[in-house]
Image (cartoon, rainbow, N blue to C red; front, side, top):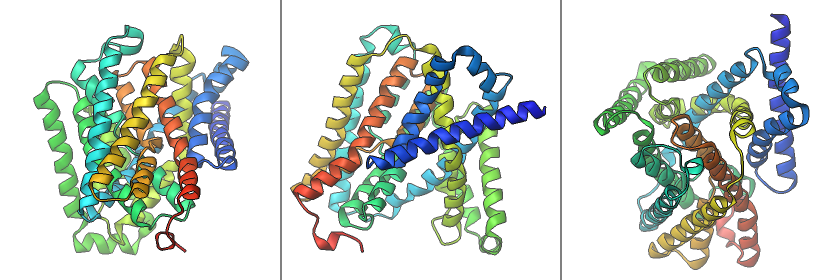
Length: 406
């Protein structure tokens, strides 16, 4: 038992050390740390197996230790997504001005069309790429995958650049939040099993959970108790999120969906917002394990070739859809050429939100390992583009002083 715990702790320490190295390297080259964490985490497993063979893999991750890491990765993901769901409330509080409406339409409709195009192209390929997923679910997943924007990663990039409170950043975050709410709804329908009626019932159940929980948490006695003991409240909220996610999984409902729903249910006020942030931060510490387990389980064992044509195509569609669609929508909403271009660059950020969507689809057997790889490469490239392109845009067309924060 002691040896099992020691090796399990060693495996966990190794994954977190790899993530930290990725974070340091990414920041050194001017990228958000999460880009390095994702890239290093996904590649570390296959590289370890290649370097040390199955003997090293068995030593580090045999005898159920990989199962423990997998459990920790899912727990971390659930807790982190509570914060992501809460962050989506930015869209609910954004002013429904003309630029927001048009930008949201542009960054949703055009990428959705490119997602449809990608789904149609993949459907003409062999089963190595397409798989056997039902057509409707597969198309919905591709539409969602090319439509989402990583709100937390986008907020972090903007904060690091001192631009979090500018007009364009606020518009980008509001638009991304609204789009992601729609995307999560579509994902529920895509990954739920059974008939269309059954999927709609699952969606209705999630919505009901959000509404009931939200009203209960707003009761004054509950608020007072939560405010009096913030640490205890945080622990209880985390335990509730993990418990509900585990229960949902036994009922065939994806844990990702329930975690987002819990985040949406937490009221956006001075009592509950800090709770959501602390729960999410705890999960964020374990999310690198998710990348490592994914890379070890998918890329090291099941891929027999790299579909370069699919990677090239999805990159073109993803960039054209997000940058072009956001630019077009913003211009129709009355934004200047410079603001519209910056919105396109910002909304092209996909980050961890995209990976969660892909993982949920992969778990539901809607994506093959090969197509999963294609979409992960697209996620990394588009996210890595955001920071450098925004800085280049700032140099070419400087931001007015009133748009920067002190």
